[in-house]
Image (cartoon, rainbow, N blue to C red; front, top):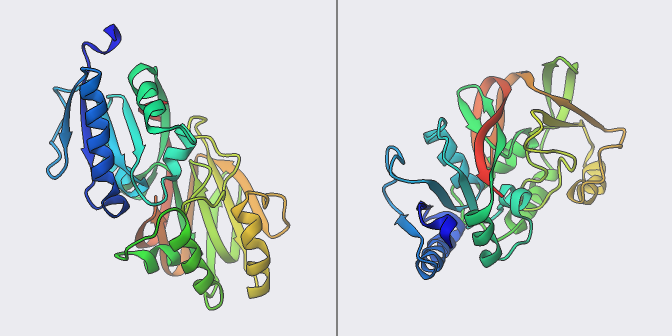
Length: 285
């Protein structure tokens, strides 16, 4: 392939992603590139400070691995590709759907780089989404635990938390919405789904310069059970208990510490300032 003669691809792997799945995946990718005589280097344990000798960076891992990458290399301008090596792989699904590994490799080799937005939350970056409240509590409960593939671990934890989680009071301020009250969750999405397959923001796009914000009111336990499968399928935006709008910047406070996640990575803060950084990265997809 003449177009690939000048390529030198860094294949990054998170050895912990997907319970070891990412290592096998990265080795498969390297093997395929060798067959096609494309220059590459497989990097597992010690990622470089910079990628000056490379033309592209391919990442084998999930949303957490991608989050780690963008926070360590926020100014990178090389074309990126994310391969499905984690447990949830929600951002991978947004860009590549259900393509096979072979199909995605061909897209990664031949596709034109396209701009993708990311978000900044206080001093950290995220690419798929930020979840505050109930989602933050679910992320906390899953931190450090071995996750099952897909949404199994998320679903089990959600079912456990549904029965006892107490909604907190939030102050939400943006150009499109100013409100105060108890809320179950506040989701600020760049991608369409989270938790390995929950379509929390079914209309979101990662290249339009806006977040999709989805806010669920203080639902009772029965309402939570009733609407969980509706949210899972992405059929919830018109419900009366849901507030949905697009924004580029949003400020959130609470009288108690905010529990939240960025791409599934748990954290807490006294207040949260989230802003859109449009067309910040380049992806081949």
